[in-house]
Image (tube, rainbow, N blue to C red):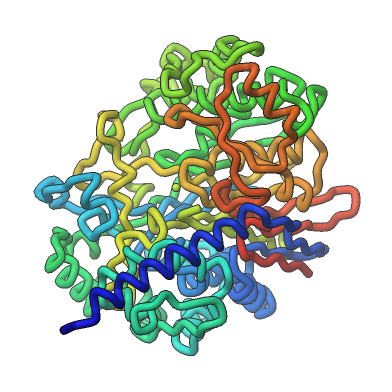
Length: 582
């Protein structure tokens, strides 16, 4: 008689017990962010080895883009649950000498045969049927080609070495492997990497990825063609097709990153640059515009002022309602972006807030506003423009479940970069050493503007952001965390701008989250009982998480202090990151 069913049952039972213990530990965790201070350059990523890769490029004379690309390739190896070659993302760049900003959108895109594929959102969302064409390689190679200074082979060397020689699994990755055990065991190639004789690999185990190293070497030799053409593309298309996907070789060969301007706004004297649509920088700016109608600093920080927390929560759920109703791929849909970014529209949304009660009582009943009537607010509007954003096609050719990193170099150039596989470990399928994404789950079931179509990008929460003051970039910030990203980025910005916090204080401060599609206002456990009681009196239903909980993201940030002419780099204590500076 086979003992495998009994063995498998024991594995699941052990995993569940260990997961429960880990969760209890996480809920009682305390800590402070990892901080570094320097005068010429700084880096913060979600893993020490990715930070080391960035520092190596800076030491070789590379610029912020070289360092960010090296760190982004490396983080896909050492933090494989959050990003990698099989995913996508977005990179916000401020070029210091030119005082110019741009955004590179390399998010995943639907293939040409997507609409032929039967897809059940509940059953298929963590399978290769949910995979879209990956954009990471195109985006990172494109950034390096246009704005970097070092050869691709040099920039890829750390990632190749980490994949080939391996690295020690840290506590964060060990817990995520454990939590996602059932997904990882479904695919033989994936389980061979993350499981050991059927058991989840643990903290301290060495993780090697030789097949990924081979693919990275082909990219180092052949550039983007090493991934989107030849043996790697052929292997991915063939093996994913055997599992129910419908990719074509042309889907890969024709993928291009989109280089465009970031969305732009202002907040209390700062210029705000953030992720272009269909990513969610517009939501960050809308939320800040709403909050700008009140002297937030005078109300007090949300940890001590229920008025401040209530206002921010109400502003954010209106922002999320608008994001859901309007933001989509501008190559396919028309929507009132200028209206969403308008200060008068933000005032209208602010005036809809009842400072005494959560209104409407159920978050899910929050209605979107009507930004279309504010489309003509901009004095600089081109008279030939019909008021809706469209990207020029010629120019275009030029979310915990994610990762974020920030870099600033000696010339004052700054990068804020977020990339993702979708949810943890994406589809769970590995091919050619590449863990494929499940980004199709970001398309909407009921909101037509974000419905799945061939060639289309889904809306994404990623929101890499940079604040500029008098032409100098002073804050680079972003976070993983799926839907929590917008909320987290807004809180970090207000912590700095409104409440005068340094990078460490801003990153350490207790966080909250609420949106249209949730039933609760989620709080970290460090909010006082008094604040909780006052929130409940205003009609908020609360859900309490751990003291420093990964649910609220894993932010990385760099803050420039003009008084000391120093950069403060901070890595979130909720995630195993590392900050460094020179």
